[in-house]
Length: 260
Image (cartoon, rainbow, N blue to C red; front, side):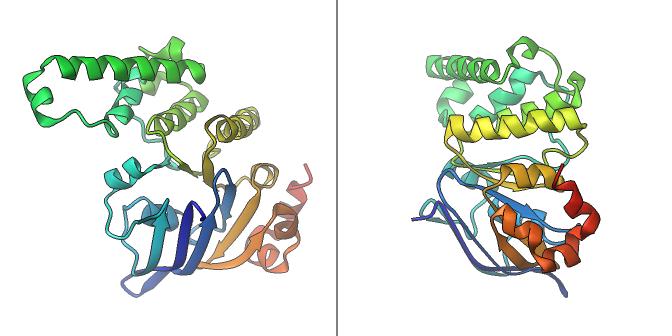
């Protein structure tokens, strides 16, 4: 059974149909790209999958669970995590505290230990800090553990946001334009990082991205949205040559950039 099954998903905001009969199947350890022009409905898909929006119609099943009506924190505990196009760190907290907060989202303390600060509470806190430091070490961020998140360079902030998402121990990671605002060197490092994350953590990943060179080098399968509907789906080699994709989104100039 696929890790995720989305069938005939639609979302309307009043008279505006943002998503129309969207279908998606994601297998375990698969890396899928979701592309399309601005306003095509890509982030709407992510917002529905993670419980920020409720679909107007359609079904969503993740790891055998029906997601309809589930809240974001419930979906996170089921094993889905995401990042955002605009980095959403806790800027004035330390790098370490950003990771600890993510662990706390998936660990149940129990009300009484938290309220009375009894020994089990402190044992859990010690475990969270130990796990957080180990994760930061894996991503070469441990040396910055006490630095405020807002003081990190942009590329390191993006790395921290992805690390924080992984602290929730996801089976599926949603990356919303992770290369936005990055220079070519940072984008190259990001490509290597995403490949490494997929293999290291045995994750499925859905990637929204406008950098077509990154998408074509990284993704195993690409889905193209236009005006809320899927116009093409297949391996990168097919998507590059699809006339509908070229006409609706990419253009000759963008196609040429894939060769670089």
